Image (cartoon, rainbow, N blue to C red):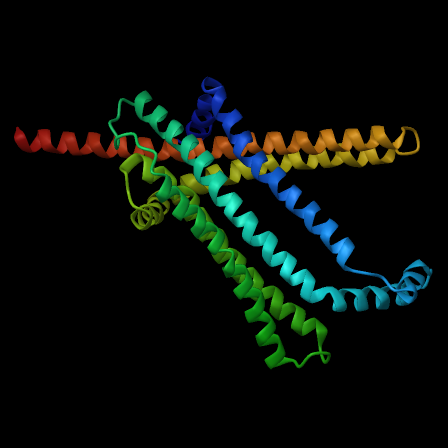
Length: 313
């Protein structure tokens, strides 16, 4: 069942090449937009943050303590501007991600789920865009990033209560790490639920809240299958990332034998290769989850029909 779901995911990708093109389109559109925002913010900060002669002299010295002190002073002076800039980038990036993900992931999920339904001869909810529902789910995924922020701030507050600043840095760091780890686990589960919810929006025409409830129930019913799919997919991506990282290290080792432009080009190509392969596996994982959801509904209806037939006899 698990291996079949993974194979089914890649089968759909092979039979529908447009799916991968659309996945790259929405993901890379967001990525390029985010890069443009970061470059714009960097240019703005470069113009707004002015270095004094003393700061430039300290940064140019070989003394690491002088460099660290100068850097700390620069960051302290620029902190209000940095926070405003970060808030602006996050706001614009969130809107960009919600729009691109709701459109791209909505279309892709609809195509995948309806393709599996046709393959299994299953009648599902009528085909409809449902952009508002997808957008609400994507907004919820952005909002759930607050879990990580709350985890960090909560850990910092607890650390200050247990160990005042400057007394025991190790204890404070461990408390913050533990709090952030708990928050990361909670965020990971919530994000998993929200990533599965669009499947049930398409399959059952559910509202955002009902699709989340159904996704939670779906995970409970199929936890071992879904975990195995995720583990297999994540392991494969990890192996590929390791191989490409080794290739990147080998490329960097050639910096004395090749011109800088060649090294930069090779590193860029290796990075792009990983991004493309990662997108393929993420899309295949979504298809594998969709396969389990459709087969579960098919089996449920078959059992219901058999039960009704038994009662009729």
